[in-house]
Image (cartoon, rainbow, N blue to C red; front, side, top):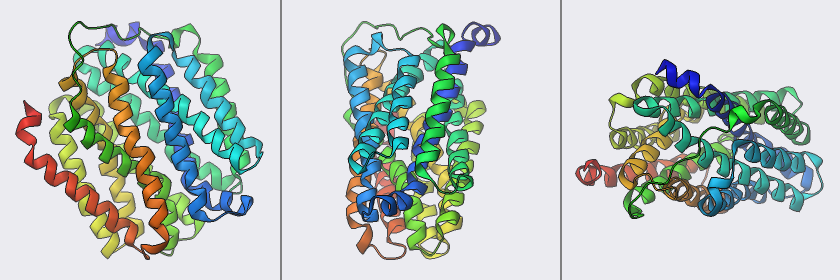
Length: 365
């Protein structure tokens, strides 16, 4: 393990830095939406389209990786993220802001496909743990960004400008050391497993709603904008904590068991948020959301094999949920009531849990 870490340190460091920036960019949407709505003179529900624009961009990036992934390296993904954040920071109007979110999303989606399979395969038996480390670093940026947003006066343009600058710094520092080996083609048929892909779409869609729309739901439930941003950071602190734990335990727990437990926990925490305390249990949901991707991705990768098209297909399934779920939920946010958002999350997580329990033997095979 120590030799593998030494041989591929550049890949791991570049991946960690990139995922920190990915977490920062995604978590900025939630606290920035109210300010963007005021700045552009649009309704909060319309501002929520920025979340969907991000995920649509991710889908485009993953689609490109499906077709041309062997030609794309980490630095290309960083350059795309830098461009997208810069367009948002430029403040050229609402249409340009949506375009910037989509461009950032293209780099985000491509980076997910570039790094996850490389790290999972490069580190052998400890690959799941190293992938957990990679994805845990996402939480570092996600915790910091809402707090930085508040420190910078809740100014979206300035905050996204800082994000673009950091993307540029990581791009300059990554160099050839961050490229790492591309996934190697594996002989055999390409067999998508539609059951686990559907589970992933629902889980990642739930995560996207929590991150992108959770702060708005907290504001509706009585929190101030500053408090909602701080609670999103706390959500990601819980998210990060559980992913750090996975670094040491991922190889001990069956991935689909992990997935099922995470969805069951999200259902329970959402019910408590809806009935007792939205702020306290919103943070609690973060401990469950931090497990969604690991359980889904490793299960899908194991079941679908090592064909180069597998990783983009897995990520694309999650992005279908990431695009559609916030779009659908944004449309009804105005009629859900003070705590209706959390009832919706509880309902979806509960249905996924029930289906996962019913299919646990099939998924373990």
